[in-house]
Amino acid sequence: MTVQHDLPAESTTPDGCPVSSVTETPTGCPISHQAAAFDPFKGDYQVNPADSLRLARTEEPVFYSPVLDYWVVTRYDDIKEIFKNPDLFSAAITLEQITPVSEEAIEILDKYDFAPGPTIVNEDEPIHTERRRALFAPFEAEAVAELAPAITEVTNEYIDKFVTRGQADLVDDLFYEVPCIVALKFLGVPDEDIETCRQFGMQQTLFTWGRPPAEEQNRVATGMGQFWEFAGGLVERLKQTPDAPGWIPHAIRVQADNPELITDNYLQNIMMSGILAAHETTTNASGNAFRTLLENRHAWDAVCEDPDLIPKAIEECLRYAGSVVAWRRMTTDDTAVGGVEIPAGSRVLIVTASANRDETMFPEPDEFDINRKNARRHLTFGLGTHTCMGATLARQELRIFIGEITRRLPHLRLVEDQSFTYLPNTSFRGPEHVLVEWDPSQNPIPADRP
Ligand code: HEM
Image 1 (cartoon, protein in one colour):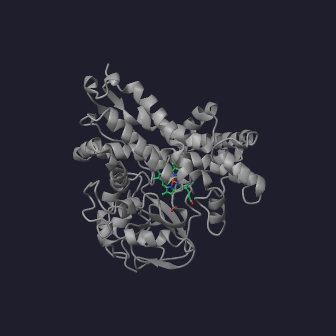
Image 2: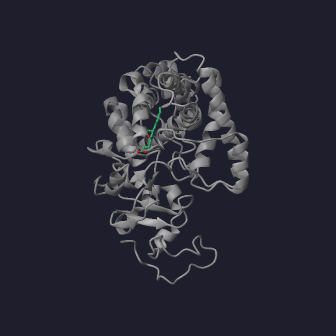
Image 3: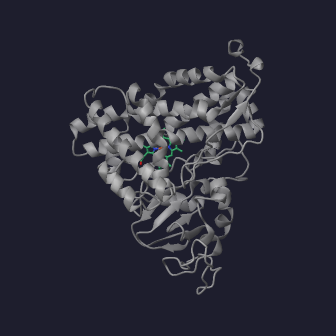
């Protein structure tokens, strides 16, 4: 056991401290001040998760957090080992509410017959791979490439709305809506339902990965219940047009051949979780990428001059400022991670943002370098059996956003002195707003000038 023993075993923290009654890990070791102070819902972790764990990476790379009742893992090699060992590190808890749901919120959810179940990302082997294979066709590179012209078109329609304005909020004006439209098109949601699905999105992040106070839990639970009901209705309607394009119609066709593999409950679950998987992750990745590129002007200018650099720039953005910063697993047996013993049944928070800044993997990890040779080895999409199925689509969207904006607005700059805000939660990270400005009379394409 290598957890630091900074606190004497008998010491208790003073009143008002978050861990006053807990001084030991579940394996009986005293908890360090650093581990006791770790709180991913506020403070340093919310500002910059990788930076907040800088000391942990060198001094205490695996530690128990009493605030969360999770073991926190911070180093690249340890996290890679966890991802590559799905039998020992079960994915079953990945969509569990990290904040226990109140009795009242449970009653609200019951009213909607909310029945969250397996949905690929939280399934274990062998059923996980069986379903993943059966449902993969729409994620293949060729199928995703077919969506590129439509994504480029809708992106330009949105840019048209602000290109002569001289200022914009890239999140409100582009990155929130376009990835949502793309996600829903990908799933096969009809146009008339897109707005309703959009409204439900954010509730899900707060519900699963946030720490909503009691009164907010009821509001969020109501939103989740309504979303669940809506997702079920949508699947029923899509069953009337099984030949339609999109992932859910594809899954409906798989169900026709193999109803035991893909049940109705499973369809409802992938409908609901698919929206979150595809939308907010990409919205956040886009906000992070543009903030990072514009803060590193040399990189932005290089990409404007040579669009062939875009794919490398995307990988470095995903490494440096990923939109998924932490993921979860549960141990199925007693084990050790980085030399720290972890009992069976423990919850583990794997902070991929920290792994992505691990200097043993990425030299000068805090440098943003679009020519970094191994940037693509970041863990932002996970690794192993559960690696993100939508990575090709996400990369394609980022390519189109960066390609079109650097082409039409290369002189874009961040509004000075803006403060970036983030939705408080453990795992999904992207700025709520990215304010930019430019001189529209200097737009390089004459038709884009006022
Ligand atoms: C930049 C954007 C995205 C990021 C950072 C991201 C990240 C992730 C992560 C961390 C996982 C879990 C990996 C694991 O457990 O090992 C995952 C799984 C998944 N993602 Fe993404 N994702 C993104 C975009 C998308 C998109 C656009 C879609 C759908 C079109 C999508 C669909 C999925 C699915 C279906 C899974 C479950 C895969 C499995 O468990 O086998 N993701 N993603």
